[in-house]
Length: 488
Image (cartoon, rainbow, N blue to C red; front, side, top):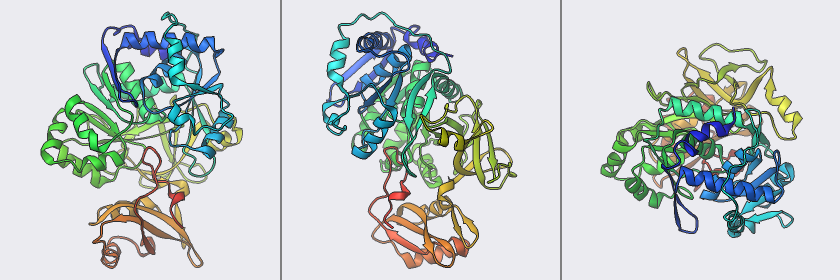
């Protein structure tokens, strides 16, 4: 299936409907219909073709959230281009790796960000390109595409080495969005407040695509700003909000009366991109009257598992496999383990990418007999709910015992005075590794008292051998803790 086929339900079928309110980085505000988006992306298609771009060519963008990102995405779908989204927080080393690996024809950027690009980058100014596009015809160019047509190279966060470009197809994106729109009952009546970065699959493949397919209204901001977000919620009155755990932690700071009023209008709050502590889910339920829907996905696979929209949203779990995904949990040899036993999650389905760009070695290592090895450790309950225990690379083996850091991190977050926690393995001459906890804590933090409490709830080999206080945990732009950057 071509992705344009499902977008056309809104681009053509709802052409006169209000679609988007976008607050641009320069402070300006743009309001567009779905018909406006169709025309703008058609004009950009002509402008890109005039600059020599053709099906299969790569085009990068290094931009904060703005309407031009959506124009570019739609134009790429129509022309069969391959888009390379680039994290706006990346700098010289990370940028050079991605640009060298993907080799895009050009990178579209704004003056404030273009200065970070390597000097030899072929860069196109976003304002100049769109000014040129404005004089182009609004007639559609539609290159024949299907489910197998590559649409994007999205680079992994690279926490364990150089990032790899996942080759995601139009079919991957279509399958993912159609499933989410159906599973989460998203309709044209919804109002979606979008603050997630569009260079990431969470904001793009989930947020933007669910909006385009459902025909709901979207308000797009450059980024989540805690100091302004309360006013956004109150003025826009969204029914949908997709966020990361760090955002929900900040939302817990708002007064109960304000939170309850927002919660009455909010139909669905979704969390992903990093584990959601059970304590945050419960506190949000009490404050807002809404149970956050936690789900699990990856750059390489988009969405795999999610708590049900209608049904139990079980705290601490990521829920049940989505309709289009097969999931199994395997041991190191690839054999399926019994329910209740920890193992690596393997997934298979039309959501899984076509492999890693120019990395046959990495592709071969990640796939086995049609199954993608996620590298995530999980446990499935007898009724199918899946609980994640961390990355396979995060596993701590101490004296022959397996320790899953998330179990300790969840317990630490339940303790008074601890706001954030991350547990990693440290070398030990006797046990091989021992757990060490990094915590962001209040001034009243009492390590001795904490050790006493933990000793009653954890096996002795799981007790952190040290607690290291830090001001903030290093995180990616989507809030995922970067444990390799913790001071050692």
